Image (cartoon, rainbow, N blue to C red):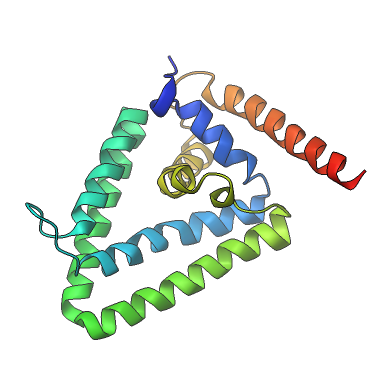
Length: 186
């Protein structure tokens, strides 16, 4: 049932999950990842691109299509959330105007990113995934926390055995990371 390559949800989820195994860090990410996406869209509201109203719409489309290709059910929910963020960020930015919107967005970004780094430094005790794979970490973060919430709240998995397969891959990746860390110390 799993896909390969760019749309290999197990591989993406395991990569991201290996950097997020501490429950407090996971909670921090669940609270602060979507506001990072939202506040990014606030900034992008003011950047026009040919044939689109703004760059935020392009980002929203890319994220939505990517999530839909990973898993149709949860991807549809993620796409709706992306579009709601785009509409909300555009509305807020429009009402605030550029001179205030960028300040609000910057403050939100600084606060949310600080919380992310505290989650990794204090609780996870591991550098964030973005240091190893910037594009994958940014693209997967909102979907990862959504899938995490769906699994915890409703027992959702994209297909039978998904979480069991991912947990095995996460355990293997964490073991590999700890082994490399231990070799550096010795």
